[in-house]
Length: 129
Image (cartoon, rainbow, N blue to C red):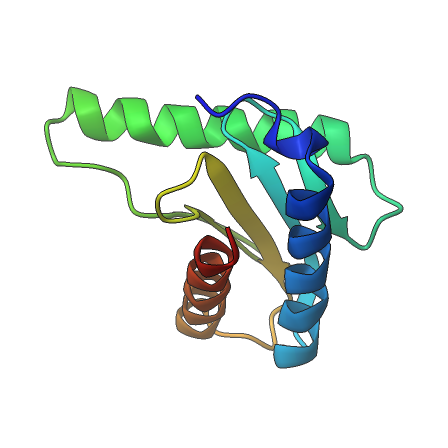
């Protein structure tokens, strides 16, 4: 594991910039966070939320998704989607990094749009590191 990605100023700055760009790209994005696999908050948008608590929950979801796909022997998990009456949460790993991008989109976005935007920005983050 890469220790302390959440403590590296260059990573935090790149993550914050990426989330701001993501919000500009999709008006239906209402919350986004980059977090480490081990549950540390790197950056989030908007910043007023409890990032520590969310990062812990999101990293646990990621670990559970990975465990389920391993147990069922269906390969690596690609993404997690949580649908609710008020929107969709899409979560996936940043390719080649020990980071997870989790994003909440309101109901103006389709699940396909939310997944496409999240994938695009996870790949952009990988290119920044």
